[in-house]
Image: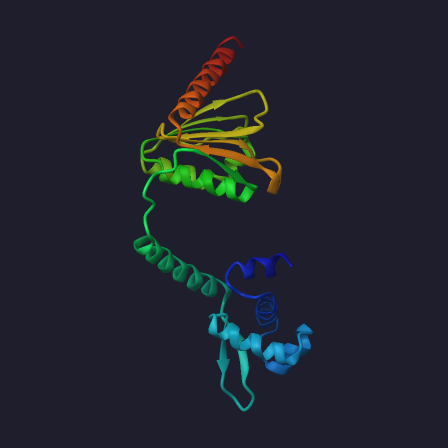
Length: 232
């Protein structure tokens, strides 16, 4: 079922996803065979097969009986990603621009949405990033941190994990970290909890007073870590 859900993220309906997986597993099939194998009604199977072909998940084999052959999963996904990238660029080029930058306090809910904001702040940083996160979250955003470091971004990390990456400055805390905090370019901050799944909540803001507050808090935390290590 998890694979079906992932395929729906690439634009397939659940019926289309089930049929696509069946074609990958069984090989070339006609509409009757698809319906019989999947348990989907014949009318829905033929409709879904036609749609699957239109969406690039299968090809038609013209024989006495029309059969369907699956497109390789890597090819199908790559084609979808290229199409989405083209659509993304078109949207960026044509969508109306915001008149003013939001200066208030924005609540971001849900682990997935928070991680996306975390990643985007890292990837969009121009000069430096200060980030305090638990080790397991750090592992999740490692590719984004590497990309930022490769662009010459100063990366200062506070974590409780045994994490090493060339080009970063790491301060290891002996205390468990319960929240995430990120400051990018001394202009925007993200802080909050990410351990409660869809109930996780974070605050995002470009308010300079909040940014300054968290900058001072993270600097003091770094000093405390260094003092603690020095006394051991």
